[in-house]
Amino acid sequence: MLRPVSYPIARFFTSIAMGLAVLGVLVAYAPDAVAEEDPNMAPTPQASPTVKNLAAPVRTPVVTPAPAPASAAAPAPEAAPTATPVPSASEGQLITAVVGFQDMKGNMLFLHDFKGKAVIVNLWASWCGPCVQEMPSLARLQQQYKDKGLVVIALSEDDSPEIASKFYSAHAITGLAPYFDKDHAVMTALAARGLPTSLLITRSGQAALQRIEGPIDWQAASFKPTIEWLLKTK
Image (spheres, rainbow, N blue to C red):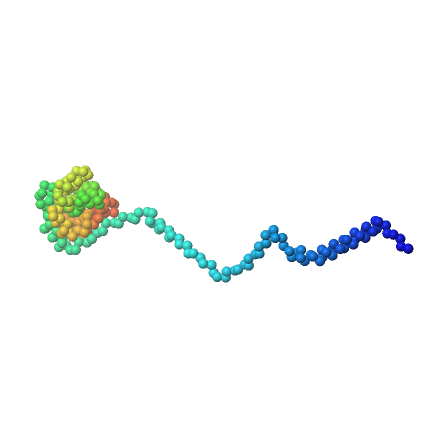
């Protein structure tokens, strides 16, 4: 005759049997649980495949402005006056003998009237800016060498002698006699290309082989040997 099993032991075996049954159910449905996704969760984004661009990159050319030359900041040096040879001595003789001009009283004068003097003929006009700049220097030159036989003939190319006289008064030019080139006769004979233009004439009345075109500083040390040469040349 079998002995009845006590209650605690029966409960123990019952728990084991139930646990094994639950474990079997979990194992049977595990793949479906893993495969099933929660519809409330956003899908995990998949990384895009990396595509390497094997072509050489296109580079936009960079244009760098060229730096301005250092010399552009500083003003260019002023060009030195141009000395142009007189074509021949016969031209100098022609100018000395034939071409005349006027003083402020209307008297006709000729270059041969100044024979025995070292002469500088300077063509200028009151409307000529470089001439105006040069005139004080020319007046000082006349004052400096007048006792050594130098005569500066400042020939105005203005329309009338009165214009030259007014210019002298307005700019306080003294010690330099004004003259008037009537009908631009001297300027035409010299074939002057512009103003101011100066011509050096020796004491013998011959035109020296030097013509000065453009304004200069007549007191410059570099020009002094030329003046000394003109005073000594017969």
